[in-house]
Amino acid sequence: MDRQEIEKKIKEIIADKLKISIEKITPEALLREDLGMDSFGAVEVIFEIEDAFDINVPQEQTLNIKTFKNMVDSITEFIAKK
Amino acid sequence: MSIEFSFSLKKNSSRKSNNANLEPSVISGKDNNGPIVILIHGLTGTPHEMSFLAGFLKRAGYLVICPRLANHGQPIEILKDTTWQDFYRSVRDIFVETMKQDRPVFVSGLSMGALLALLLAEEFPDKVSGVSCLSPTIFYDGWNVPWYTCFLPIAYHTPLKHFMYFKEEPPYGIKNETVRSHVHDHYSKAKLHEATDVNIYGYPYFPLILLYQLNLLVKHLSKKLGGITVPVQLIQAKEDDMTSVKNSQFIYDKISSKTKEIVLLNNSYHVITADQERDKVAREMADFFAKCKWK
Image (cartoon, rainbow over all chains, first blue to last red; front, top):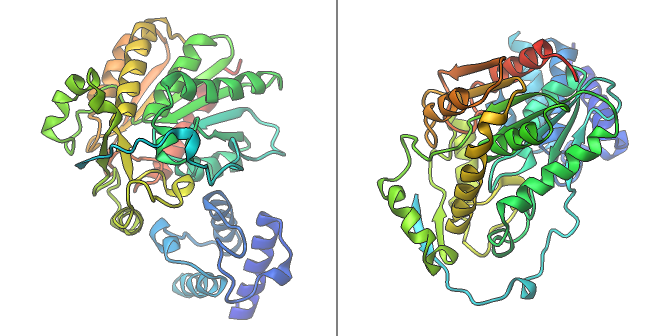
């Protein structure tokens, strides 16, 4: 799976879980401030990502993710290490 | 933990709340048809400390409600004038509302939230299907509690209790270094009357008068423990920095429940819902609820 496909899937998950439009999810979008992702939303998104890519994302890895781009980078890295 | 005094004479009414629109509770799994779980956060905490458990239980099919305790998220001057009865009312009102849905209801709470969960079980034995107590707080006797804490009851009987605050300091009840450092970044910069994002991170200061309220709640609950008959699970870390495992044992010994268990964690501190073994906590809780007879 290439980065573009990963990015597309994560976008769909975020849009679905946070009930926002996909257009709002730009690379520089701040997850909390721009997309309204609170801790409850983050848990749901991460669970869904774990299922979609069959990976396990440790809690500490998620704490430093600020933007959508950060998230795609981290998840892409996890998938590559799988 | 360091002590600070604030002799601000500003009346509560003169301080405007900047969080007037805080939601009274966070609900996960609205479309789920399974039982209801009420997850109660701790004193000076926030519903966010229960978010991992909420996500886990939602996926297991539960409808999860995380109530916000009275005045949590408001300026500390408002929070500090709140009584334990106000805190209990916050969860009781939601519990009574859930009863209308005619679905089994489980309750769980962290620290003081665990005591409020037990009070619900005592008041509604025919409605609560089971309770899971997370790091229940009866005595502050953990390894990181300052020695002078034993003298605090003296201050409860003086006006000092209205002006004294404890500043939260590492490890903040968290063993996981990354999570702790994240909390530290926020708490270490906080000033007593200028704390921001308390509705997300909780309060970096702990008013003594709330410790007094907790003490009153403990006294009230202690008389009621023998009347608790619903299944009760107690989960606590062996290395809990705030409250030792004696707290869970105390409750276990006093309650009359036929089904009761203590689960000890090996790699966490007090805030077990966000610490290294949060997955284990969630699994143990879900397994326990599955074993309980639904009412």
